[in-house]
Length: 125
View 1: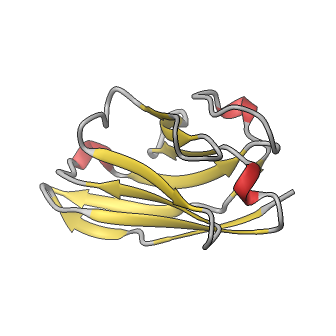
View 2 (view 1 turned 135 degrees about the horizontal axis):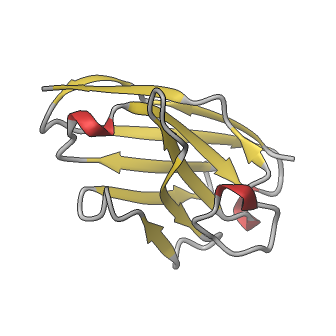
């Protein structure tokens, strides 16, 4: 399994931006689809975005479409989540996740095998 570590979380005012990073260790990152999920206090985990191994296929959740962008740099074994126009409803713990190598990006959390510990994002009004 790949080991994952998120960074870049923090506190921001509504309308601001943050960029989350997820660094992966292990030799399979470049062949693995990656996803970002979030979980607000008292709510179920929610799909945010996912990207296939090459970066050519991307899925984005409806609640963040046109505001969040997922990307990856396989040379750095890192996946990113650029978050713009942040809203208080975006407040949550954001986690990155990896699928097994050679499987497609999906929007289902149960498809992902490795998870990072998460990073807190807090958006104030």
